[in-house]
Image 1 (cartoon, rainbow, N blue to C red):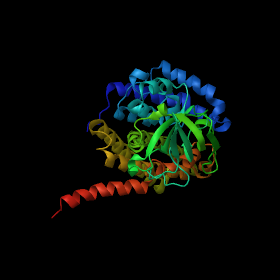
Image 2: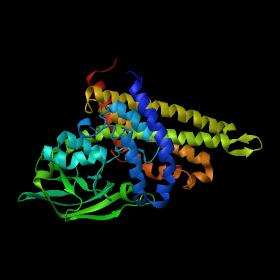
Image 3: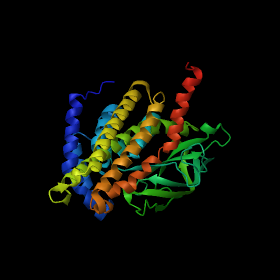
Image 4: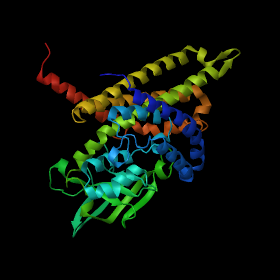
Length: 401
């Protein structure tokens, strides 16, 4: 793999780094104090600046208004944006919209693309992805209670979903529900586009995350679908194709997450080092004089670099051979990068002492909200088992002597 960065991407990442540093990081305390919704007008101003810089929607198709970067290029962009909790939103490539845009582009009908894909890429409204259920294992997406039964020209959807991130304020949901209960297990569920103002789409609450419910884009919704009707023309892809479509969505999505996490690592690493060299512990001495702090810094620097190179390699593999053939690399980065990020966040918090527990820095917020990285999109343990099975199959076929 060529680890060189093209001149074009060097220019783009420099521009993004400067924008994040000057325009977004100073805005974070305001958003966390006043709430996301109150700051939408200011965030829209930032989004207009991004459009003027021609950096809007970096990973989305050119024909729909994006920059059309490939996965490796977007990985570099995502790393820069990950330094701020506002980065991906302000640049129009935030989850879950990014994943929904990908599958609408791959599987949507021409009518669906005009009605939903084009305005989503333009940032005219937001979407959400309604898959996870309260009583079902999120790591096994073929197990699902929600149903969508045909009635006339409609699907009638019933079920309870939760952890539907960013549903608060979203205009449309992509819902995963059982449409073919007697089909083979991987062909039972379908994806259906449901506008959130549809009768029967009933938000229950934003689920508190370690005591913080959040709001709007920063919320994680619980939703009851109660006789919620959607026309059969809102079926996304083939009936019974939800599992296959979800895999198409989640593979590249993990690259997006992992490079965002590298950005978080870089931010927390900088904060940790700055704190170490400025926090006095005795006359003429700072935390940086302590060998344990030096060891943490050295370990974190090596861990971040190793994780970053793994993600770039996985992105390169996906661009070259597709997500299915690179599934082992995708699974490996999911648990390696998530654990690296949590280690760096924890070390940064520890170096900040009591200050690290407060919301006077971004570290505590990151600690609360990024712990879920080891759970969503497949728990660490599930990915490790998947990798081990692929490795062991090779030895079963070709014994070593």
